[in-house]
Length: 186
Image 1 (cartoon, helix red, strand yellow):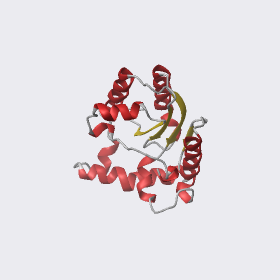
Image 2 (cartoon, one colour; image 1 turned 90 degrees about the horizontal axis):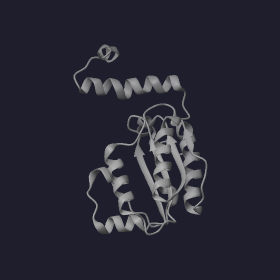
Image 3 (cartoon, one colour; image 1 turned 90 degrees about the vertical axis):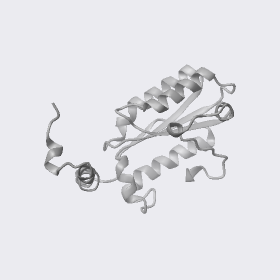
Image 4 (cartoon, helix red, strand yellow; image 1 turned 120 degrees about the horizontal axis):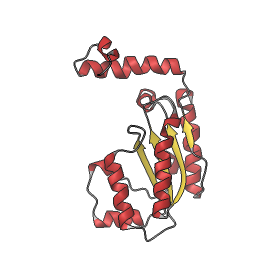
């Protein structure tokens, strides 16, 4: 995260690796844990859930760990991340860790299309402001209200962009025609 530069940050890709005893030990003795993950059917995916269960089983020597979350989804509304944020808050209670804040980001598939737009500007305005608030709380070890943001972009344009740049190309890649996307599955 560019907003927390100057701090020792170790990144783990939970879904792509098996953790060693040493890695678990480092995680369990951290001062701050930042979980960044995509929303999966209004929740967290099974690999991440298995990881959280394993962490909980192993316990934490340091109970003064602050937990922050960044959750990204493909819906327009960032508020779609509320259930996953609640799951993380409940996990923190179960493990005895301090739940501090979640940043729930809507319209996640849109972000790569605006990667050259500076955070805090244009369609990235809301995410830039929210990331600054989150990073301030992380750096000062403060708690804050959960932040659920949608892009600074009209919803109707988001729908058009998502169809033209994301869904239609995916359908074509998988051998479907545009009109077949509207067919109901029975």
